[in-house]
Image (spheres, rainbow, N blue to C red):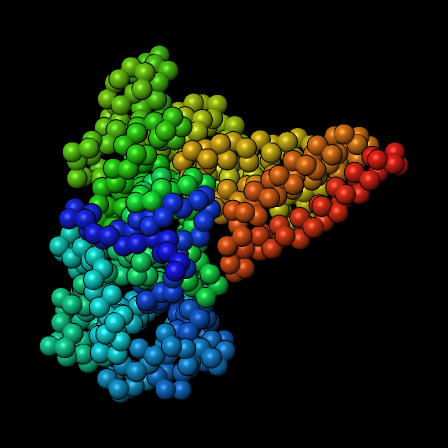
Length: 500
């Protein structure tokens, strides 16, 4: 009998959670789960309601039964996920939908994912039971602008447009489903635009800004969860990150409070230095002080904005308005610059790192370094082999600098770390090409290139081919074959004394 890798447990405070049922090794795949529901994001332009990809007025075809726009693939009109809104349009509305404007977000799409949830009530009680067992945070949402907007644009809209009987689907029930979608929905980046999916076990994984698991998706939208680069002992809770781990503490706290309705107090958020990286550090305003104001989140607070910015050197409590002004000034220049131009990125980094108003590891700088590291060698007309040696060295330096932060703060972000490893592989391979007259240097560069390639392949091997990182994973496999052949040839040439 094969023992289950994970199990679902319940705690009076935490509610349901996922724990390791056995010792789990690093990088182990522990969950492959089909979605309970999938559908378009709430704010979206017209998309095909089968594949969920964006469609234009010229390319759209109407579903023969309900009139909703679909793509040209005939399978999409018969897709199981489209059945809910198609059935309700035919049998409840009794009039075909006619979407005319394909250029802006369309209000009719706000309710589609909620419709697909509500449809399960009478058509798939098992899925409905799983959905309604998930957290909705209705009490926290009530009175908020999003809650009131959902009441108008989803609950009232469904009662009016689809002629739903309020005794069958009450406003409260519809708004509860809206909360379930908001709190438990995963953004799935397999289509353009990304769509939303809700998973059963996947919804019970805890949040941490330092998670012990990484997530991605299969090409057909299944959720994949794997252990990151640290083993998990039997009984330990499994966690993923619900927010963007590249953001600073204040941004993560605000986002989690707004979308998931809790104040994070994980080890990263509880440490003003963010594990010694000073990732959110802003220069102290005290004259001649060499310290940085860092976000101190009080353990007793339930307010995500109750952050005390305290200098790590002189202990001065810095006015949060001053912090906001400093960040807004830099952020304005970030938003205005051309991120597709390496010169602009270099000028930004040179200017603001030199000024010193933000810590050298600040998340603004990390974001631009990551962008620039991937930009070198990807520009049209300037491939990797045409970079100057200075640019190639800078690319390597940027990759290593971001990886150093990533290893501490977002080691579960396989796409980012894998992409950077692949870039380093390419840099070392190019170094080898440029050192073709020195056998020892070539061998060392190629072996380093192989090391980074193996790291990249391991990190990216579960990424779907629809994503750039999935395509990079396929390239890793091809490059590994070529690199092994080249190393074999090099070893043979060294053994015979023949030129390379």
